[in-house]
Image: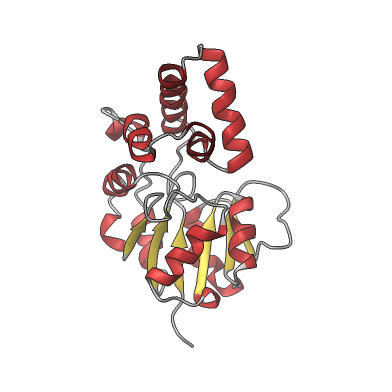
Length: 212
């Protein structure tokens, strides 16, 4: 049997982004909407959340309804002068990834400059064959299937060889539909039928391999 290809989400999968990173991004996006759409803070925040819930990414709604330049938006909303103090590094993560046989790819809805910076701070940037970011998916974020298909084509992969590791159940539903195995990183008590394995933390993944 050919070795598996492990496809990892980044935020809240390889590291905990909830504590410091996501609040910063949310504030930056809200400020961007205020400035470029002439909204007050409450209106901008509500629109940011609405587009994220409807499309899987605020950017998709902005491109669809306002013609926003995606690169301009991503650059201005992902500036982190204090990123080294915001990324929570787990020292055991590197060994956990090393214990997984097969190639590894990061697939993130974040922009490339941010994803690379986070992986470097986590000290695992050399462990991945590729960082497939929102730019590479032509701004079609997960859970849309188009980004998944572009990743598979780029690396000439069969979906059946791939294991998607994600904190978003919705994104895993797309992965499963395409034929991938799915690992949900979640503290939820139950997993949906399209999840093959549920783990609370990515550090548990090497022990969970036998279940796949």
